[in-house]
Image (tube, rainbow, N blue to C red; front, side):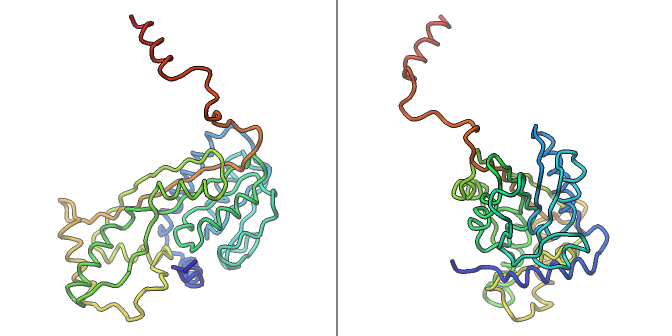
Length: 292
């Protein structure tokens, strides 16, 4: 597989954001953690051991600990600094260092979108889950930062006569759901939650992305520093195309949520093809006669 992301740079971005610790910069992670709590509340079971994997933030683990549904929470991060003095396991990016069938719940928040081998990581998480264990994951999907991407592409074309990839590609929800099945999860579900955040200018959005550790880690990114002229023109285009009546600009974040279960004999299964005792036509005829 041809890598898309510089995973070492992804880790450095997250460490820089953690060290800066700008108040409020983690608002999207906190929102995702809140959503995690709400989704977990609908699951009528208790989990003996849960793992948060490469979240780069304690919010997911804290949510699980507060839920009252998890006895033990283990954190896995790509660098000791990201554990923030908490106990946990440090592992190379995209390597899940958990024994097979060792956890009951796996959680991944806002990290799969910067993963080169998403099917491989999902398969590792499925193997780490006990039978009938649950995966809950969220990451930015298609439509995220679409306004910024368009503004930068147009500005690049106008100022440099070409375009460099400055915003990472995001997966479509249908593709994400298919990845769950490919990784061997049962009862896969994928849905999208879209959040619109408003800023005074493109520069305020860019500052937030840097504070989140969410700037581009594409291997194909331009190594030449972007010019002031480029960003000035991009800010103009952004304001022209994506501003509200009050002059503030919109930024879209579309979060894909995935849930899937490690296969178990106790789970409901679709009926075997050809096992129906009567045809659909017969059922429809019977329903029609009842109406009459």
